Image (cartoon, rainbow, N blue to C red; front, side):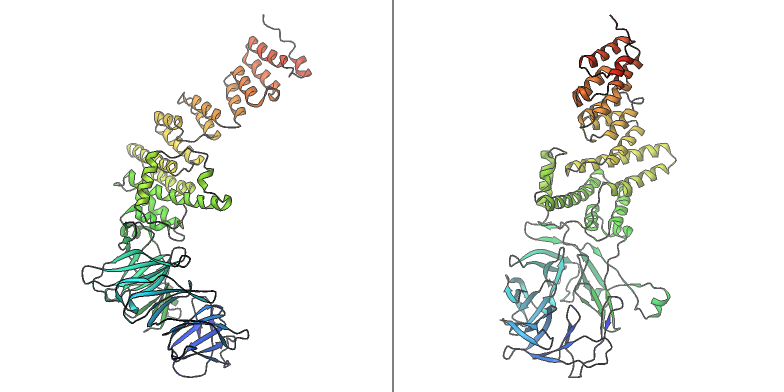
Length: 610
């Protein structure tokens, strides 16, 4: 019976009893079954019936290499099978009628034991049971390519080595090195199939002394989980976080400890009654399989690991706020948790504005990288080439970015969670203001409002550093808060130095503040004059102030005299009640022969003023 984690999937096949089964491998398309019963041959059966009543015809394939002992086998794709022997690798193709195997290629290599990654088709072998180096091969296109070998710091055995895939499917070879005091280490070597190299990239410190090869691993959502059954502990590592980087290797401590919440078996009474699982530590009876499978052989139960994030627990486990934000930004579907964590961190009394600024920098850097990648794909050029809305960052900003980059490992993956300005507006700033408005003490309200203004200003600083223009709703929020606190000087400086970007809605908002802050009118006019296609708005503001001549000059310069609405300006001049003003405006249009015949007759009653 073949049964997996896919709901309602269960295939049954009866085979003739030809002895004990060593290995069973199901093809990726679930149509063929390869069964190893001895160290010399493999039986191939077609898995075409699900009733389990028919006995399918089996086809036996012995090893082609003389005297070779079969160590294991694996499917490379739906029609290709690999035999791993103590003398090398044999690649077989399934015949068209699925009634046999034909040898494609054989590669000779003395092998004592091996590890194979079916997702990457990468094979790691050792020439001896205890070996000081590992040989790495890539199998693709019916060929076996040899990559650079892994030089171990000490001799390793099979249980000390594992393979895992993290971040964009990058394959790592992990080697467990036990130490008596004070901790054990795991060394990760990144495998590059394209360049044919294996590079030492990470050293993970495990806070368990003398583990003696008993550590087992899983990978869930690009996190490496290291289990130590003897102490019932599970340690979590994230290779994307910037640990101690010496220019070549990153050294990482455990990010936190994990707790297993195991779902009860589907047919158990607990599952039927509650549908909930129980919290457990890693048990001695469990066996971990890459990437995310745990099997309890004693109970005959199999689980698939999933990541469950809780903002409160994460804030307690991961003390460094910036590290916590980086961790959550790399988890699938963690945007809501990330915003909750940001809110919890920002309302702490001991939070520092510089720390919050670093968190904003991490989020904006992730957003900027996604924008760069999207524009690069569309235009085949870096996105910074098209960045015309802001000037280049200052030399101090470039220096701080370079210093941060020097401390971080290269080729960091793109964040899986992209937090934009709308997310922070609704998930952080609006919720902070809700907390402020729910308070009764005026002094507390004023202090908390100033705190929100400080956070917003720091967020603007981060946006500017990453060359991201602030959206209108953030500008409006900041202006309203500054008006509420009557911080006119701060508002004037932010507008004068264009920290708050120019836009027509903001100019209209500033015009409405003229009664409370008289310079707001001139700030609005300056903003409109810097904007394109704002000639009409400037003229409307001038006409509302009764400044007909300046409005007329601005309209003629902006869109041309022939496109100026004659009747509108004549009516505006007439409403002012100054006959000399009307005479000047009327004669200006008359000299340019722009007054229609009807308007000429209508306004002929006006007597010119001498």
